[in-house]
Image 1 (tube, one colour):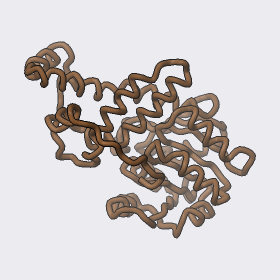
Image 2: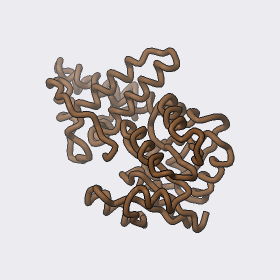
Image 3: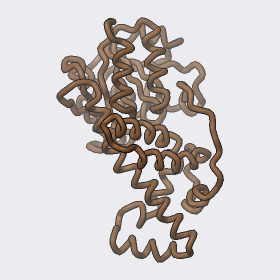
Image 4: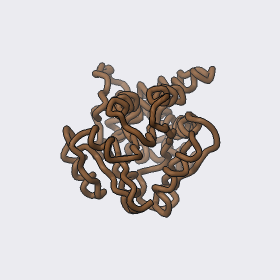
Length: 292
């Protein structure tokens, strides 16, 4: 959609990748550099993003705002955008529960904002057919957002129905996909503690090839991302409980990922280090803010 002004808050690895696809499709994409790290500024420059002085300028310039941030910050980011008097389409593309999506929708109710529910699956878009953006809510607004990414590496998929459907699909997939990493880590730690780790790896390679249990190098990749996965597990637990299901699986996975928080964005962390962290005393941390 050539010439559209779009805002992105905040361009981490996924957000910058999503924004870059909109730029490639012809949109002018804005972000707020103030208070951001050098790594974030580098990502924004590589993606071709344009700087805005603050959120008020971004909101006044853009008619679509995309929120791609850690789940724990999603509601606060929405509040900040609402406070600017933004008028347009607000896309919450975060890994949050349908209940949290409804809270965000209520923030803008009765105003000049149309909220679209988004759920991103797959890695930051780098190759065709790997990354999808599921969208639900107002059909006309969903169509406008989909048009931003037409012909790009990010595939928009419109879901019939109200806010919350895209978030529910995203979390249902993440529950299976990401909790499997936590379960594999616990199983490997158990085997390691009893001196049968090599035997477990041999057994898993025989019966469960291709899984994180059989290929621990996959597990190593979850360590640097655990700081984002932990709050996502909290959202999954909430979504399960809101549906009448127990949230204990997700709670346990969240505790596992929380123990790896110190390895944020560290590609050198080893499986041995991650397994050792599971048996050490847990460190209580401050809750995340809206500015990851």
